[in-house]
Image (cartoon, rainbow, N blue to C red):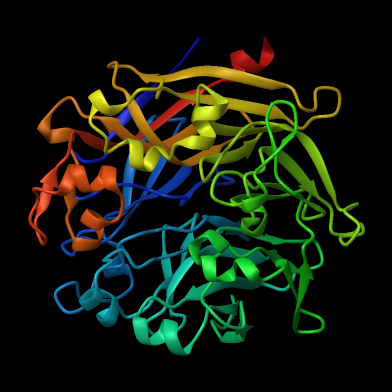
Amino acid sequence: MVCLVQTISLNRLNKYYDGQWQGMKVASNGACYFGSSTHSPAHGSTFLKYDPSMTKLEVLARDMTDICGEDITKTPPQGKIHSPVVECDGWLYFTTHLSNYWEEAINDYTGAHVIGYELATGKFRDFGVIRKGFTIYSAIGTDSKNKKIYVLTVPFSAKDIETDSSHLYQIDIKTGDKTDLGKIPSEGRGASFWFFIDNKGKCWFTIWKKFNPDLYSIDKDLYCFNPETKKIQAYNNVLPEGRLAPNGKPASESLKPERSWTWAQGLNKGQQCLFTMGWLAGGDERLWLFDPSKNIENGKAFRSLGYIGSTFLSVAYGGGRVFYVQYRNLVDARKYCSEFVREWDKKDIDFPDDLHLRSISIKPGSEGEIIDHGKIVDQDGRHVSMIESLAADHEGNVFMNGSWDSLSKEESSYQYVWQGLKDFHPSIYDTFKDSEVGTYKIMHRGQFFSYTNVSADIKR
């Protein structure tokens, strides 16, 4: 089966787009808002809008560095929108992120900003740098009851990593006032991809320990900030232990310390939360429902909705289904990272690397029903190698941002080269070993926005 999508080349707009992680949202007006990111010192991230009713792509902000009031000739750009995009009272909120991953740029980075975008007017609001020199990696959440925003600031400079930690911040939407709620964890930097703000205004989150393996020895794997007590409560060793699809075989015991959310989505007006803990976060291959009104310590708060296989960031909820992208074979999905595989020479790929769009129902009566919508292909027959940004609505529309094989130089990404990129992974090193640091390499892949409608699959 084939999942036919329509793609739009983003590198025709800007050559420096080289990936997108999170940063995609279907808003209440039905349009899809998303970022496209770059590691280049010459350009920051871009914020875009796609209106499916008019099949129109619109650039809302060409460079977030400008929106943040910064000069790219003086400080590193705001190179990524690497956070969820969340909505509250007619505004979208997201964060910027450091993307120039080399020492000089890290030391000169001003810090990540929180940005608001008003749907009705197209006006941006800059809440400013949240913590000087720190990035935000990468969760953001809004408390519609108390009109607050939550973010996690993360140190990247060697000095800040040595002397400080990550900090949870609360921002007052009306005044813009910022409150430091404390270090999370108390020692050693942590990262968090997603927040869940419940119907009482509590902010729930996990720490992505794979980001910093020094945290493996910490049993705390679920945190909650309570705005009434103004304290952060930590729960020890409460997240479910990893089980593998399709039959529940235990994941490797060595993965247990890694447990955290790699995707989370509030449900039923904040009464519950959907989450996954897939690849790089404990190895569990189920979709979970979290109900904070039930007992957390004895596990009653967690209920499995079905085995879906390994996932990472490319997960989205819409229309009573959770959508996700993965390799055809479940073993390959837990073994290979598409972000690495996209850099491999085709001759070195010895497994079926076709990415599939799949979904699982959470509706009563069909709960746990999985649909394989098929191998993802576009109108011109391109091959997709990575999808890390996904959004869905209640009409069967699914939106993606990812890397596809380019059919021309005009569609190709200009990948900026820094030493860490060359050293990071053997397969990446092979790709960039002949590239000079401080230049760009013209890739055989490009960044594409894509969309499809799968309502016919669901009706069948």
